[in-house]
Amino acid sequence: MRDTPTERLRRRAVSVSAVSVAAVSLTLTAPLWVAGGALVDLALARRRLPTVRLLAFGTAWCWLEVAGVSRAVGLWLIGRAADRDAHYALQRWWITRLMGALRRTTGIRVDATGAECLTPGPVVMVCRHVSLADSLLSAWVISDVARMNPHYVLKRELLSVPNLDVVGNRLPNCFIDRDADDAQAELDRLRAAAGQLGPSDVMVIFPEGTRATPAKRARAVDKIAVVSPHRAEVVGRLRHLLPPRPGGTLAILAGQPEADVVVAWHAGFDGMDSFGGIHRALRRPPPPVRFRMERIARHQLPADDQLEGWLDDLWVDTDQRIDQLHSEAP
Image 1 (tube, one colour):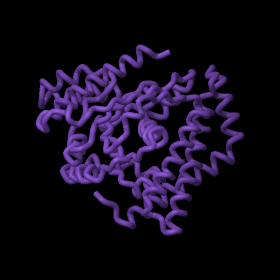
Image 2 (cartoon, helix red, strand yellow; image 1 turned 180 degrees about the horizontal axis):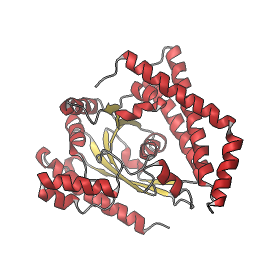
Image 3 (cartoon, one colour; image 1 turned 90 degrees about the vertical axis):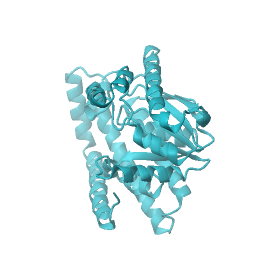
Image 4 (cartoon, helix red, strand yellow; image 1 turned 135 degrees about the vertical axis):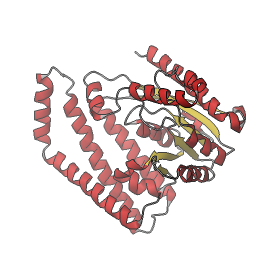
């Protein structure tokens, strides 16, 4: 489903206004929420001041949203709204500063290894999805560490984030309607987008489709068992990941038969699937977030009719690697 210009303008008027008001309000009231948040945290023996840290990051995020949209408007004013290189540079600037803000306000550090496997493209990255920060983390690794251009498959609900809406729609990302009446049309969009990938491009999809939790995992396995008991037995071994939804990944692979696959997994963001989860995690010094990747050459993939089973097996193997990362945590 595509936006009409009127729908797009209305949505952006609301989202940009809301973020701008939040940025100004949080800045002007900073003495109040710093003092109040600190008092509440200390009264509850939260010596790392998680409330203050979370609000500080929220303030930085709001101002970076305002700055990113302002720069995007500037590019439009000088006639460069279609300049992909300029917008990738803007995206890299925004991501790098947002990661810096995350590190300074929360103490979260990232240890990423294996970024060299992202080059050369075209590459399809299948990535774990467990927290609100997974897109940011993978985008930072692709853009800033590997210096590649990410093409994201994201849910349409994220268009409420101003920079994802304005800058993200000027770049070759796919915002998918997960509740579309015509699912095949959405898959056709993914297939067509994958066909445009070049040597500097990484197309990123989160095969789970949503952030993983134990309750979601149990429901997904039960649903699969009704249709395919054998597949339910395979994915029932997952402890950290949700069973993959194969449609999007298979459509991308069909659209770009030259692309290798990079599987990405991480540990350290577990439990941060909501703002409440992040607040709880910040009550103690966070462990480093360890991000790992491995490239799989395209010729190692099975025939098309066996790809769904291959993806399930890959996900079970990745789940075990996440287990290993947890066991090695300092």
